[in-house]
Length: 294
Image (cartoon, rainbow, N blue to C red):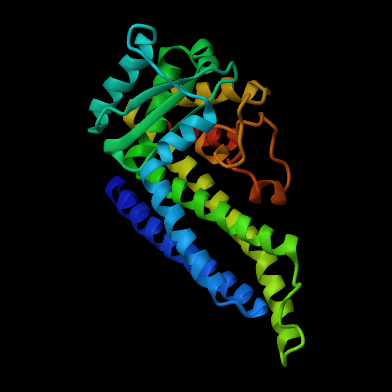
């Protein structure tokens, strides 16, 4: 599969996931409206889902940067960073993204935005302090690959819609089935089926979100290595990042999958369940693949 095929595939996946999550919201909302005998719940939930999706598409970069506490980086203060981003963007044939710095000593980085023309690359102060030129270029190439592969949009869409489903399910579980139509014929079975849907919906949404995140990290690693023609740069950077066990000051479960490495620390993934619910594939596995393909 070529790079262009990956880009087209990610665009198709984005629309498919948007449609799938929309259907999931509609189904869950329908169960709730049927149990309570209030069809307005379905219409309100669908309207909110569309509204949140619209907001996330246009303002996702600002939301993510605000959560991370990132600040705009000036060329004078971060010349090496600017130089790396500009040179690699030109090499990749991408518009130069906005550049931000996260005031955090933990090494990490992420890319966000809705498309290459409205993209952002953000790196932490800690990352700039520990990486040499080749390693920094490896990380920047990785993040630019997310932009070029159209990962940034699909990541934003998945996290926002998954979060909305979780909120919807949590709201229903908190208020329970009081006021429902349990006494009507079939109402009890409907309530039980609805409860199962409410519990499983956020779990399914989370698994889909994390699976998409893990797959895109492998692709960005390989694409970034092709961009720099030096896989060891990224492999060495990942080693240094994984050696730092600290947690980022403003780490958030909502945006954790956007980072190049887990912002909650370098905990090794041990079990199958850990892998399933991890936002990132094991760094050791990523490093081995990079060096093997070198």
